[in-house]
Length: 224
Ligand SMILES: [Zn+2]
Ligand SMILES: [Zn+2]
View 1 (cartoon, rainbow, N blue to C red):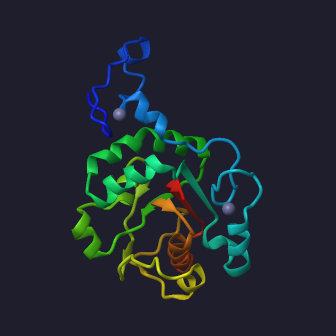
View 2: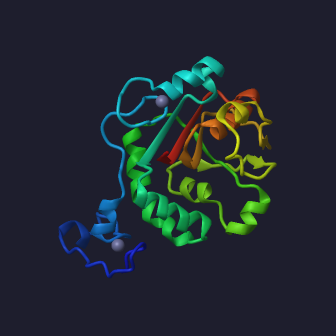
């Protein structure tokens, strides 16, 4: 086995658990594993922002402007440290699909830690057709496949994703970039790679709610 990040050989661990195949195979070497920063300890109960277990300023800002239920909660797995930025660039923008498997076990254990008990449907945030052609795969769909939930791809994206020149206020006011192809009458867990401002997820949440979805949550790989 080679580490998916640095390509060093991974020494197989031989112990009772690996012999009976209880512990999953490593996809990263121990050194690279340590560079990833799982979110542990205090986090905002609404958006997973690290540091305090009180509702953060970002979330209060949203509460004043959008109905709370547009997005009930976001749960993230990792902090956006330097290594994670490099990994995301290689995985997402340079098309290294296989690298996504480095996140698989963490996604599974973090989802279990979340204690999410509703019978929900996972809905990956889509790319535009153009972006999908460029990249070859949708990273959100790959993440959704790691979750123990049924997945439905009910959203499509109309415009490109490049919005970085606009401020958050401008982005909220701009048109919703998604179209909902089918109403879902069960709780939904939106899946995406990163929660930054939460605008994208709230756009999707607003559409799902408008067509009768009872609750919208988000599960993201990274809290930016
Ligand atoms: Zn490594
Ligand atoms: Zn928050």
